[in-house]
Image (cartoon, rainbow, N blue to C red):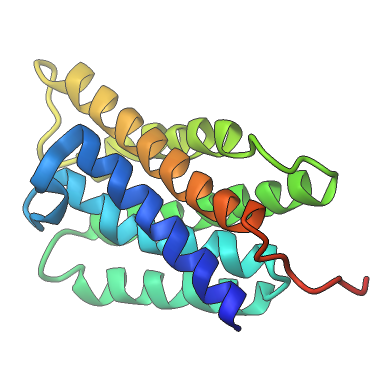
Length: 177
């Protein structure tokens, strides 16, 4: 359990630290898009850690809880928030599965180079839904680039944090397949 917590906190710290380098203190402002470095960073760190440690059912439970919270908050926000949240969690769960496959295939370092663009792709694909209320012809390009960059940033930071924890010796117990 200790190695799982260390990986989770390392992943979250990686996402928040990288976000802080780019966005500064805005990472800690809930009204700023950079706050997703904390919220989605925690989700991604949990997903990567749980899938990597063979706790897939807990990763699915985390996905369901996150989706449930987005649905519960939808009346206060907008229905698009619930839909984008559910699709985001599915995308991150898929990226976590790929991260685990890469690790099991023997890739010890560098998985974050793959995870970042994949999470960025999920963010980019969901941008029209996520930004439904604010996107228009004049700002579409900048909003798409913001979402892409934010996804890459979160994916890179979280995956790097988890990888560094693995490299530091917090290895998982051998799996039995």
